[in-house]
Length: 352
Image (cartoon, rainbow, N blue to C red; front, side, top):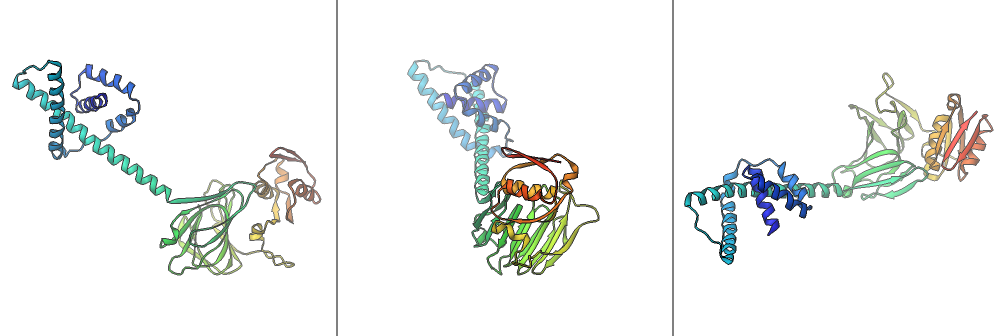
């Protein structure tokens, strides 16, 4: 009965019929039923429909039931009294208005809940694979595409992507794809700076948000790359070709630089491809600055590296490592450059 009274008072409040005493009573009842406060706040801000007449029969029935219940209670208590017709008519009209508003608001609240549920279900259709710094992972997507994720990377895709006309994934970080062939449903990789379209091929995409370059390296097949800020510019790659897009670390393109085309780097001795060597647990530095090497080691080992001297960032290194520890790699780098390092937990401090 108390919750029914709350809804009745709420209807009178929204319709402007509530007295100060009724407003105080409503506040006191809401203290007893705090779970209704959320519904109350939603209903209070919901726009009242102009189609109020459509609810007339509903509110009439609700009013009749409420009056019948009140009359039974009054008879049981021996308190039934005759009221002037004009007074009863006025109260009946006020109550009808309150109940009418309440029914409309309840309908709006139901629509609100249904819409929220629909959004949650839509969100539940998305899936995500993420690797933290210091780890790498391999997974098979619903359409059969194999994907390797480097450290500090994330891909997002639809769970039913194999039933979609476009198989689309969002990438932040670095990933190597072996795409399952499906000529009728192209495979698309989106990053902040480019869109890669492919039917069936293997390629590597590197797009870390804290780096000033993004890369697409084609190994087999064919891909078409579009610049995110200029969809009209489409570049087709052939095997062993790489497209490098220059941008600032805040995501904005560098004026006058755009993109460049390069060849992927293949080791003459063992045919190892530098751009995809990480998939086989090789850490490769190819004439890279100490700043770039530090970023790679951070993701590879899950540490934070501090280069305390600006001159150190300009040092360049070349080398290939597999299964070596972080201290072993740092000692190897010291052979060609002079620096000191100190490891404290997950932090590495490097200085001259």
